[in-house]
Image (cartoon, rainbow, N blue to C red; front, side):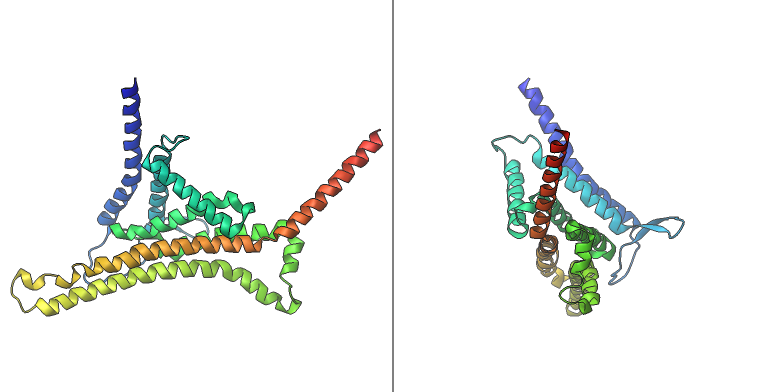
Length: 308
């Protein structure tokens, strides 16, 4: 009975690992089958696989959208794998990893947003996970979705709606009044500041990831050309050997693809936390809730007196 239970447990683990890896492998196969043959340096945006005809404007399905779906599916199976067989007392490395991620995310949210926003921990962890894995897709030759402004703009607009929601917790009139402070003449600048929040978040993340990818490609191409200049006088295959491309591109990739990806994911999550927490007038909102509770108490007391 125990051996059968262990077999089922291992089988589920294998299926979950396949669920993590298979979407990325499928993306790599799709990339190979659809990539056009090019010579030299080729820096382009996300390829359009096909277009869905719509009444107002056609809807293109791009490489960035497909790779974003790959990231979401792989992360889903990764979370299922880390939490499979979870116990009250940790007895496996993956449960320790899962608890470490949860504890660090909770601590990050508590330190930057406060106790009121502790429910945001899963959202912040999802932002960092999706952003990081999206950028790291470049390590396996796939187009990173974070190099497409449309993907990052979608994230930023979502965060903007959350920010606006918390700004309006005290009511629409309170929010509109805040746009006129400290003086009415600054209202246009305050409106511009509201609109610029998602724009700055999107372009900061997109620009840093894209610039790193472009620099890596340009340096790799330059090293290839320099190798040919140095060894081109040697006849045969040895003259075409890319000597300078050994090692150095990998070192640069550690910074542009790994370190920069981790940094940009962390920065985007930090900006999300800070913009939401600072936008929320918590003291005014709690005071408003207390006034509402007091009015409700007085109204209920009046109803009780009238019925008696």
